[in-house]
Length: 170
Image (cartoon, rainbow, N blue to C red):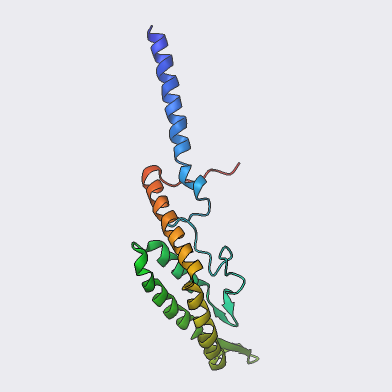
């Protein structure tokens, strides 16, 4: 009788271990592109965005990707959808700041020298900032924001319950 009880206990314990091990992968299986604490890793100005073809990560010497990453993170951190204007205002500020870093570089023969490029700064601020911010304010983007917030909340609940562990590669 004791032997049967031990065997039953081992079988039950093994089954619990299998279930527990599977549970630790639930969140990673559902959100394979996650980068905790976010349900997806910010990916600059695309490539998953429907607007990625018209909103590049660079404009001349200006790198816009981090401004887009901050915008993605802001959206995922929103607690109320009606506060999305904060993200859009911050996005505008970040784009203007990125544009102000435009520079032109030349080789002096001794070393490479870079100086601000006022033409590129003006072009970036007059073309890129309005294009990106108006794209972010479209109905499509608001739908994406709603979906992103819903996914983020579900992701946070999943991670709180099961943790986040990626499956080892075979």
